[in-house]
Length: 233
Image 1 (spheres, helix red, strand yellow):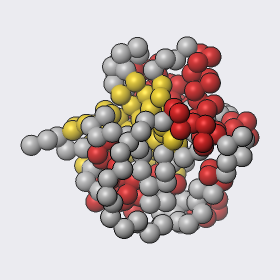
Image 2 (cartoon, one colour; image 1 turned 135 degrees about the horizontal axis):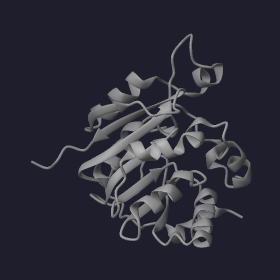
Image 3 (cartoon, helix red, strand yellow; image 1 turned 30 degrees about the vertical axis):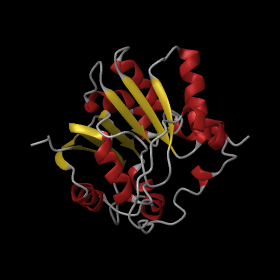
Image 4 (spheres, helix red, strand yellow; image 1 turned 90 degrees about the vertical axis):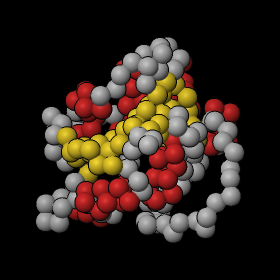
């Protein structure tokens, strides 16, 4: 079944305005597996939600570093199997809301089904294209991208939509792989297109202000960066 079609029912409908010419891909094919309409979520659960994955093992410390407060509206960008979506849903409480944003509907169906099973009534599933987070302007307090930024095939377009979606003063958290020649694994060097400095420059160029790099207990292969949307004058 093609969940990308089915999950349109769960997505927010955002009017599409006239757009500039499409940004050129910075890494063609990086999302090929995640665009597969026959994607099997169980296969990714075995890869994503296991103790051998650093961001799973250190999930509580990562959550604490995000500084999520009750009542916040949080977007989990590239939500995948929904690990952090569920944690955010608990953290924001009944007065907050979490948007699980992903390019594949099978992941979103899984997140919605598990939310219903576990009694999370504060989660929306947002099916997005490859160059936008598909969220309304000034709608979120925090955007979170965990091992996802390097999958932004059209980073400047995606960041522009993310900047619009953030409220003034809102936060963008990036957790991604350290890519260091001579130190990182061959997999990271081959899969992740650039290192921390390049990604940080892209995000700042898009209009977000760098706030801090946080040393999170348990993160050795990944780094944690916090940015903010400048407050309105």
